[in-house]
Image (tube, rainbow, N blue to C red):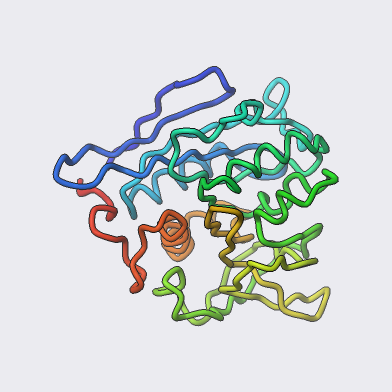
Length: 268
């Protein structure tokens, strides 16, 4: 499989990753990946995710990558695609891998969440959980399924599977060492939050859930706060997990944790 990098829109950095078409199978899921912001290597992570997930599921990516003025990483930046009322129109799912915790514009944040409330599934990775936390609205937090305002220091995390029968966790080990990552603290779990995996907090001396699913309005949401560094993002266990979560959010994951027919990765 080859990933094609094509300019699409004047939105900062936008790219399309498309697998070769197979007329005998289902059309690929159209995935909008929104990425950029503070504190992470999004330039490489967008490629890791697009290529890794395309190797695991029948998906087609459009990537919107913005950092801020003059390309500087800026937690206050407001990604331009979100200025449109119908910003998610035409996509089957949105993958959020962004870090804009300083944004305070309530109308802007509510508009992002509204697309998901109205029915567009979401995949939430790592700092997306801390994005928009300065805004005085709970809609993004309800969309995520949890409120989190801080994380523990970067260290190895022993991740424990607490829902092995859930389709998203089929194939995930009972325990997995996530090297050099950040454990996000669960300050509040909203009513539709379903925990899938946890790790123990050294600061708080209690467990925090770092993989979950959620329902928000008409949409299904998969989330994980793992993925601070490229090593975690590149790990087959992580990519398998995110692929299952993405398919689950779109209703394309079987109970056995496998893609439904037509949504397996395309053959080379």
